[in-house]
Length: 209
Image (cartoon, rainbow, N blue to C red):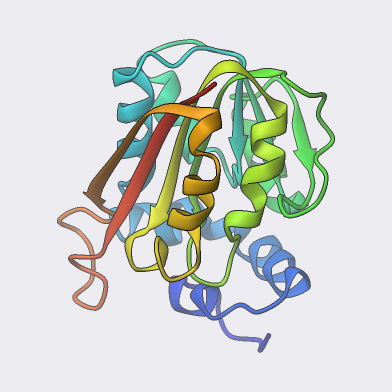
């Protein structure tokens, strides 16, 4: 990775786990104001809305939690116990200061997770399954740590759903999941810049078992 100022275009171009960790460690202090607020980033709110609409309960695992934007959105309409997992220690440090999470875990979602099997009643994620980030291989471990009947609410960038194998992976899980829904939502609100205005993402939601 180059020494470019962190932004969404640099993030989309990331190639390695080390680059992802380095970028988000550098971005952590300015992420909420310099990116999320400045671009009217509303993706986490849409994920939270689906979580509540579909009856999400705790304990919740927030996969790729970052600075806690999704937890904040969820906690605006409820009070579940939420645990965070993220690759970046600096992003988790920002999240810790907000007090949203019970536990915070620094870990790579593409590797074995430091969680016991069948622990979580809900698994949520916003902004993690996107360009330059995490692919469908992470779903195996997320399924392992989810309890029977757990609710999954996962954002997936629209253009990657088929191209990077998310659709195929979920088809493999077909016998292990039920009540599957796929919603397309805007990633940014009216405050988005011209380059990213109109970007959409998918929200895949389903129950385990």
